[in-house]
Image (cartoon, rainbow, N blue to C red):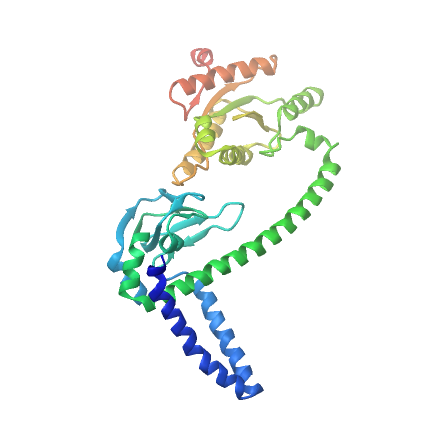
Amino acid sequence: MYRTLSPVLCCLDDLRERELPGRQGREMNGNGAAIRTDEHEQSVAATAMAEIVHPVLSPAEAALFAEFGHVREVPAGQVLFHSGEFGSSMYVIRSGIVDLDFGEDLMVKYLGPGEFFGELGLLIGNHRRGADAQASTDVVLLELGHDDFQRLVDRAPGLIAYFLRRTIMRVVSNEQVLIRQLRHRNHDLEAALDNLYTTTHQLNHTEELVRTDELTGLDNRRGLTLYLQECRQTRRMPPQGLLLIDCDHFKHINDEYGHLVGDRVLQAVANILRSVVQVDGLACRLGGDEFCLLVQEADAEKLAHVAGFILQAVHGLLERAQPVPRICPVSIGACLLDPRSDWNDWYALADSAMYEAKRLGGNRLQWPRDWLGAN
C-alpha cells in the first residue's frame, strides 16, 4: 500500500510546498494582505465544497479512468450493492441514474452521468458500503477495482493525488453533514414524541380514535359495528350493496420486501376506497389485508361500476413500474343486501364470491354463484 501511495504523497507534498511560500509572503506584508489570504481561502473552500457535494470527474480524470475501467450495463431496478456489504470497486456513471439510499430516513441521493460513487472501495479495497446502490433507470457504468488503483497511480500520480484529496474532503464533509442531520433528527424526534404524547392523551377517550384503524385511517371493525347500529337506530337508509376486497399475494410482499412496504400497500388500497366511499357509506379495514365497502342506493350495475373503478385505479398504479411495489392486485366479492338479514349473512355471501375470484386467479370482481343463478 505504501508503494502505491508514494507517488501520490509526493504530489500532495509538492502541492503544499507551492502553496506555503506565497502564503508566508502574504502574511509578512501586513493586515491587508492577510485579509486577501482569508478571502482566497474562503473561495477555494467554496469551490472544494461544490465538488464534494457534486462528485463529478474532471475531463482529465474521466479520460484516465476510461483507460482502465470496465464497461458494465445494469438494468433498471437491479441492486449494485447493499449497505454493510464489502466492496472494492468504484463506479462512474456514463448514462442513466443511480439511487444511493443511506437509510434511517436520510435523503436519497440521485446520481447521473459523469458522477461517481464507491470511491473508497477503489482507494482502500474491501470497504464496507455505507448505502444501498440501485439503478433507477437502465445504467451504463464504468467499473474500476482496487487492483486498478496502482495502474492509475503509475500513469498519472499528480491527477490521482488531486482526486484523492477531493475524495478525503468529501468523506470528511459527508461525515460532518451526517452528524448535523442526526442532531437535527434527534431534536425533531424529541419534539415529535412530545407532540405524540400530548395528542394521544387528548384523543385516547374519543370515539373517533376507538373506531378508526390506525394504519389506514379507515373505520375498523368497531367502526363498522357502530355504523350498522346507527343505521338501525336512526332513519338513515341502510346500505344496499357490499364489496369485500382482499389483497392478492400480500404475504409475498411482506416476506419479500418487509412489513413497512406491506403497510404502504395497505395504505394505497385504503386511499382508493376512501376516494369512492359515499357520504352515507362506509369504507372499513376488517383486519390484515381485507377491506369492505358498504354502498348506499346500490343496484347491481352501480355496484359493479364502483368495483370497476377500484380495479382500474389499482391497475393504474401497477402499471407504474417501481423497484418496490406500491400496491398489489385485489380480488373483490360483491353482493346486494337483503335488509331483513344481518351482517353475518351479508359477509358470508360476499366472502364466498371473493374466494371464487381468488380461485379464478384474482384481480377481478365476482358475484355469489347463487345470486348469479337467480339473476
